[in-house]
Length: 436
Image 1 (cartoon, rainbow, N blue to C red):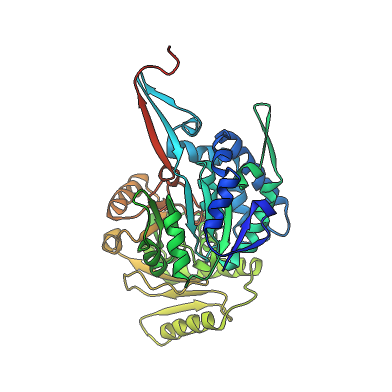
Image 2 (cartoon, rainbow, N blue to C red):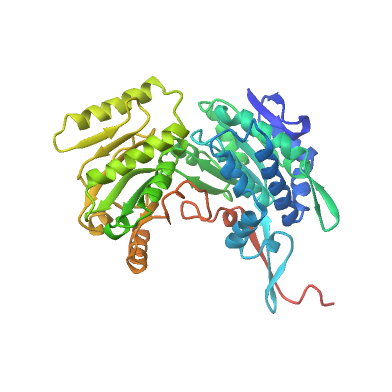
C-alpha cells in the first residue's frame, strides 16, 4: 500500500494500491497543461509568496533550515537561478530567437520522480521548486520524518494567489502538479514502477540508496540526476589566520559545523591550517570559544545513545594517543580533534571536527577527487586563492565558498545546473514565425 497526498483533497492521506492511480489523477486534472500554461514569472511569484507565508508560520519557521529556504524562495533569487541555468527565463514560455533564423524553447520533460534523503528536512522543497519552475509534474517520495512538514507547505501553496500582468494565478494551479508519497523503501515493486513512470529521476541519498535506484529499469529517454554522497572540508593559509576578524570567521565556520548535525554533503569535517605564527593549539582554543558561545544559543537538547557512543569512542582514541590532542565540551555538545596526519577523516558528525596543520597546500591536492563537493576557503591573497581553486576544481571539487556559507544550497550544485537537466531544448530553424 502507498500513502499518497494529492492537492485534490488538500494533501490529506489517500491510500492507493499502485502508482497508476497517480497517473489517472494527473490526467484527470490535466496537471501538465495546467502548469505549462502559467508564465514562469507567475510561478516564481507564487513561490516567492510561499516563502513569505512560511516565514510567518510559527509552526514551520522554527525548524532548522527553514529561514534559509524562505530566503532562497525570494523572487530575485529564483529569477537569478533560472537565468544562470537557462540564459533567459522566457525560454520556458515561448520560442525565443537566438539568431536570424533559429528559435529555441525549453519544454518540460514530463513526470519528475524524486527520491529524497532524510538527512535535511527542507531538501524536498529544494528539489521540487526547481522542477516546478521548469513546469514539470512531480511525484515525490518523501522521507517519513519530512512528510508532515511538506504537507503543511503544500497546503499553504494551495491557497495562495499572485497577480501577474493583470491576471490572477492560483497556487493550486501548480500544486496540482505535485503528489507526495510514502512507502517502504524495501518495496522493490513500487520503486520499479516509480522508476518506469519517470521522464526524469532525481535521487538524493547515500551510496547504497543511489546505487539501488540508479539500477532500476527506466524509460530509454529518462534523464537521471544524482546527488549522491559527498565530502567537504576547509583550508586556511597562514596570512588569513593573521586577520583581526579571525574570531568572526571561526564563528561563521562553527555555524557550518552545527548545521544539520553535519549530515549534509556540504558540512565540513576537517579543517586544514597552513603553519604560521599561530599554533594549532591556539586555533583550537579560539574554535572552543566559538563552540561554547554557539552551544549556549543552540544547545543540543537530545542525543541518541548510538551517536553518543560514536563521539565518546572517538574522543577516547584521541585521549589515549600521545601524538594527538583534544578539546571538548563536558557533555557531547562539541568535539575538536587535533593531529597532524594529513588525511580526510571518516566523519563523526554531530559537532565534531578534526583540525590539522599542513606545511603547504601541496599536501592537500593528493586528497582531492570527485567525491569532494565543497571547500570552505580562507586564503587571503586573491592570486593564491584563484590558483588553489583552479587546481582543486580540476581535480574534482565542485564548489568553493567563504566559511559560514557552506550549507547554502546554490546553483550549480554538485557540478550541475539542475534546471537545465529538467527541460528538453527544442529548436526551430526556418522562416520567421511572425512572417507570413
